[in-house]
Image 1 (cartoon, rainbow, N blue to C red):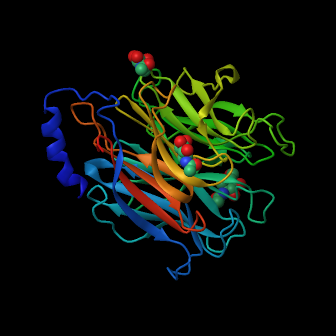
Image 2 (image 1 turned 90 degrees about the vertical axis):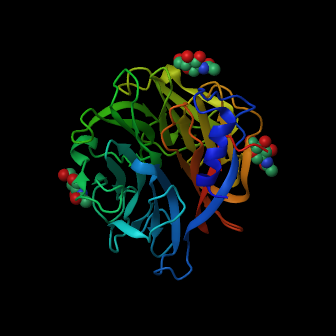
Length: 384
Ligand SMILES: *[C@@H]1O[C@H](CO)[C@@H](O)[C@H](O)[C@H]1NC(C)=O
Ligand SMILES: *[C@@H]1O[C@H](CO)[C@@H](O)[C@H](O)[C@H]1NC(C)=O
Ligand SMILES: *[C@@H]1O[C@H](CO)[C@@H](O)[C@H](O)[C@H]1NC(C)=O
C-alpha cells in the first residue's frame, strides 16, 4: 500500500482536529515501501559503485535523492559524479538519474556532501580533492543551488575563501535551517577534515546561503598527528535542531574514544561555538564508525545506523521521545544484512504536529553494503 492511501485512515483514526501526540502507543514505525534507487556495477553507465546517499523533502511533497557515482572503483579517492533523482510525488515515482556535478577523470574527485532545503531553494554542498596529498589541486568546498527542487542546478560557488585551506567535507547528510532562536532562519552545515587534521566545524549563513562564515569547531586531539586507537577524532557529522533552539551534532566517533558509540556535540548559540565541555557519548547508539542519520520531526528524534560495534550490518532505526537523551526500546531493524551510510528526511509536520512518514536512504547489500542505494519509506504511526 502506498503512503497516499494510508493517510486518510490515519487522520480519521486520530481525529482531524486533535494535536498528534507522540507516545510509545502512537509511534510504531514500519517500512511501507522500499525502492532501489541505484545499483552499483551493473552496467549502469559503467558506474562502479554508488555510495553516500542523501535525501531531502522539498516543496509540494517532492523528494530529491543524491549519491556519489564512483566511476572506476569503490574507493573514496577517485573520479566521481553526483547522481540525483527526483520524485514529484513523495517517492511514488522517480525520474531518471541526472548529473549534478562531474569531475571528469580527476585523480581525487568530488565527495558528498550535504543537501539543505531553504525556502524555495535546494542547496547541495560537496568537497573536491578532499584527500590530500592527491594530484588534483588544493581541497575546496562547493555549493550548488537549485530553484526547481534539484532537477537543475546553477553554477557552483567555490567556498574556499570562507573555508580556508583545511578540508571541509560536508556531512554526509543535510544542513539545517534554524526554526527557533537563537539564529532563527540561519543555515547550518557541519563538515569534517582529513583524518590527521580531523574534527568537525560548522558553516553558517544568515542570508539564505549567499554569504557564509565559519561557526563553531571541535578539533581532534591531537590535531595534525597520525591517529591512534581511542584518539578523540570527531569525524562525519549530522546537525539537528532541538525544540529549545539548541543545535545538536551527532558525530562519527572515528577512533572509538570512550566507546564504540556515537559522539554528540551541542551548541546553544546558534552554531557560533561547539564547546568541548558539552560533548557527550551515547552508549545506546552503538556504532562501527560510519556516517549515521538523524531526523527531528514534531516531538520525535530519529536515528539510523548499522547498529553494531564493528561491522556495517543491522541497519536500525531508533527513536526518542526525550529530545535524543534516551531511545525507546530496541528500534526497528530495517535490514539485518550489510548496510552503511544513511540519511533521513521528512515532509514538514501537518497542522496536528505530525509527519506521517519519514524517508530513510541507505547503503544496502547482500554481501557488501555498497551494492545498492535503497530508499525506505517508513510510516511513523504504522502500528504492528
Ligand atoms: C576554489 O578556490 C580556491 C581558492 O581560490 C582555489 O585554490 C581552487 O583551485 C578552487 N577550486 C576549484 C575547483 O575551482
Ligand atoms: C524537549 O525539549 C523541550 C524544549 O526544551 C522541552 O519543553 C521538553 O520538555 C523536552 N522533552 C522532554 C521529554 O524532555
Ligand atoms: C540490531 O540493533 C539493535 C539496536 O541496537 C539491537 O537491539 C539488536 O540486538 C541488533 N541486532 C543484531 C543482530 O545485532
